[in-house]
Length: 158
Image 1 (cartoon, helix red, strand yellow):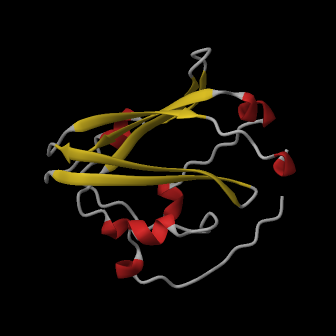
Image 2: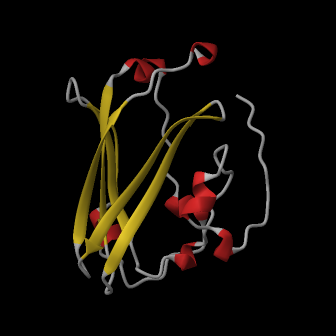
Image 3: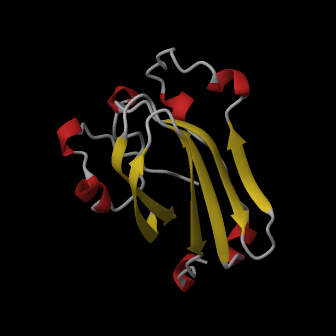
């Protein structure tokens, strides 16, 4: 695979849901620095499963020792907040998948947590999801499960 990397300088105030919804391809880097995480949201676990068979396809979980290091300021290193995974071609044959995200919230309440998720295949947007979680209690651990119908792959991308 050959990837074209587009480097642009984006001002923090320009990054908002409308900006993200207007993207036409995956970005080559994070849009916000880790210091923008003013609510101290920590992602603890992410998993993907096939809803028809129940088979766990992918899971990544923070180690217990890492979870207890909440007072330490994380380094400004994108590698620390990147999850790398690859699904084989059989993944595209699945009909329904579920993903579960577990996260911890810091000392402040979080209102209207919005997550925009965009699925690209070969730099083409296949599916767009826009989720909102109304409220997260301070110092709470939360789970968010999302069920997806896998989009059919257009014939020109098979």
